[in-house]
Length: 183
Image 1 (cartoon, rainbow, N blue to C red):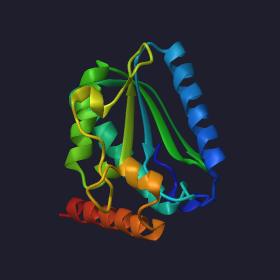
Image 2 (spheres, helix red, strand yellow):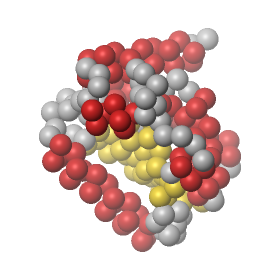
Image 3 (cartoon, rainbow, N blue to C red):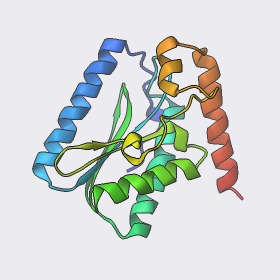
């Protein structure tokens, strides 16, 4: 189920294409929820810049997918259905699981906090009724920027940092995660 690193498209996408892809993801999520009354995990990689499908984002995605599947297995939560796709807007995974949505979200927040790559993983959890659970629902602060202590959304909106610096930091986090796994 991991995505091939070497087949990343490196396609430059526009803001309009990114918004269209988010709408399409929401439609896929609703379609899955309508077909299966399970908790739904929608997994993407947080990547700055206009290239969302790169060897770097696929590597980070594959690491997150492995961590996610391991967490589900260790928790005894059954995967009812799963699908991963490589899109110009970045890698995306959908997993329908038999587990309470709140417990899944708490476990995924802990997973994000435990891994050097967790800051780059975006695990959305939707209840079987379609409610999106957020960090705010668990009294957690918004994510911070990769490079400073500001809210990530503020830095992104203001384009506070060069994309090359952000990508360099993403690569550094991946190398740190690889070093931890090899020990």
